[in-house]
Length: 394
Image (cartoon, rainbow, N blue to C red; front, side, top):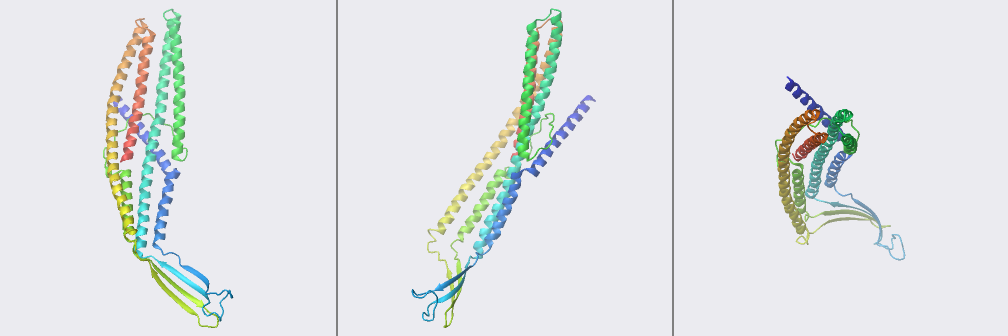
């Protein structure tokens, strides 16, 4: 029955703990300004894609043509002089405009993955800080229990001192130990406040947090390197360079230049002018072909980077998995040591009543117990931080 109640309490604590952490994450995802900035950046590339599909603005020009040095305006005595109105338009072939647009659409996809990457990084940092925040409460709990135990030792030592069965230095030793505990309590408070301020900075606000008892989390089971955001981001960059290569391959296609003009001449017939021009890829071998080769080399380099990132991510996940396994084994050992140390202290306290041991031996045993409890709390915090880092790689 007691075991069932204990399991239920642990489960309820776990649910409350996870609930508060999830609320913190939801708050940060809603209020973090940098996360929102990616939405604007993504839209900017989509607008640029629309811009790339359009033609350049036409040019409208007014002119005074063929004026002589004696007259500064068109005159009938100079039949070549005229007032001119000209309209010109550069026409970029649709295939070039569409391929340019596809580059920016692909870059908007890159931004989407960048946002996902930052979101996972934000969640990881929040989890790591939250475990640190909860660890400060666990430190405080251990220290308050330590304080009670020292006060208990002081009470029994004072009683023995009154009957001449203890010496003054034993009391002084215990009171100095009590002062050390108070100092460590202040450090735990400082850790909590500084960690909380860092959480607020990441969350973009000040959500209410109270922390919970540390509970060891399970290591994430499934892992696919292709779903990792770093791998996905490099893959998107590969697609962008591929779009750039396709655009570079049509760079030598001619651009057309269309213009029309109307010349007004005094007292003589007016003139129309029509002109069609195009770019000629005379230097294609030294210009456009080099541009294609440059993009292809960038693509080859990015492919090698892609393989490197995959290896790095797989290695990091495996390292975290090993670290989790070893830390869990150490935690089991520490928990067994704590149980043994508690039994030893019980025996020493009984022996102390019958003056079979010294208060210093009891204090020494307590110090080892407190140290083990701190090690256990720190190890649980580190295990949960390992889990947070592993989840960010998924």
